[in-house]
Image (cartoon, rainbow, N blue to C red; front, side, top):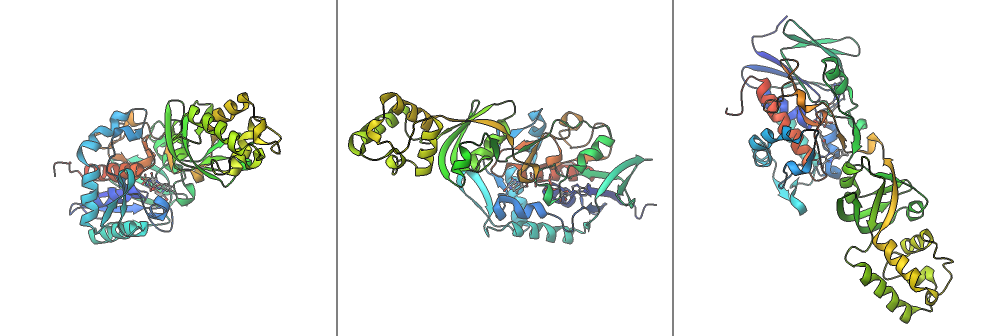
Length: 407
Ligand SMILES: Cc1cc2nc3c(=O)[nH]c(=O)nc-3n(C[C@H](O)[C@H](O)[C@H](O)COP(=O)(O)OP(=O)(O)OC[C@H]3O[C@@H](n4cnc5c(N)ncnc54)[C@H](O)[C@@H]3O)c2cc1C
């Protein structure tokens, strides 16, 4: 039975996109309830940006996103994007600052501030939050949605917004259950991959480098990124690796340039000169001051320039060339990515061709909306994924409430 004459909107999932959807859906003509499976809403927001929340990026454009149909995000970019999001946050109390490469953080450097102001806004607006209600399935009967949890408890709604996130960071709530709910309505889910995640590689050499950080230019196919790379016992990590993890599908090798500021010729000249002046030093210590000692030793072993007790003066011209090459082009076989729990975002999701890009409404089921990471839209590292969550959530909420972006 209907409790009031107001439009009853259920938001499934209280993450970044669900909180924005609930806030924009709530008005004097709507009742809005967030159903969240965890004990509290917004757990993932607290973990973002290493606890600082990289809320958005002032440079965000469609180039920073991936989807089978990237045009799907154009209407969102045109109508509710970075400026509108930052105005929204300012209005609810967030002072923000811009750092390198357009990355935006709350001035307080605390992700909890972002969640706190959103929760205050939800409360002030009269949005109801029901936690520990993990939705298992949703049916539509006589223009009403029946929402059921695993214990068979039922809720009803006139409109439903699916904001369950993807599979990444599953320990923070998003376990992929949203895909099953959508499949129940006939929606297609594209192939899913963990993204913005560490890359697993052959381990013979990297294991010996475990814990070492180098500044490197990292490339996969025609994509490259420079930054700090961390060697681990299973492969490599660090900002450029996370960024490139979106592009490894179908690729076999990842290459590291460990001295990106120098050309191959610069390096081979440098080594030749060092041999002339420091030739009495054994190879194990010869590169100290030029390269990390353990890195140089591992690279020498990798190309078979051994034993390391040899004096540097014994290096042949061919060996100097081989060392210069490996420094500029240290190739590792890709074995895959790290796990979903370690990933920041899901690549793939609900096929966007089955949703209206202007309203986020399903083309298959009237009154069913989707937003955030559960859709097949993922961004690069740098605040882009939260931006998509805020924006798509805002738009889904507006249209679910029966209004439009004109007011
Ligand atoms: C460690 C980490 C750090 C990150 N840092 C950044 C960053 O700094 N900047 C950035 O832009 N992006 C970052 N991201 C990515 C970003 O957080 C996500 O893309 C974004 O939160 C997605 O928002 P969402 O609302 O779609 O999904 P989520 O935030 O995952 O929220 C989904 C919510 O739905 C709930 N839920 C799931 N299934 C159900 C169900 N069946 N019933 C009820 N509730 C359900 C979940 O518990 C969760 O609360 C990070 C991700 C991780 C994991």
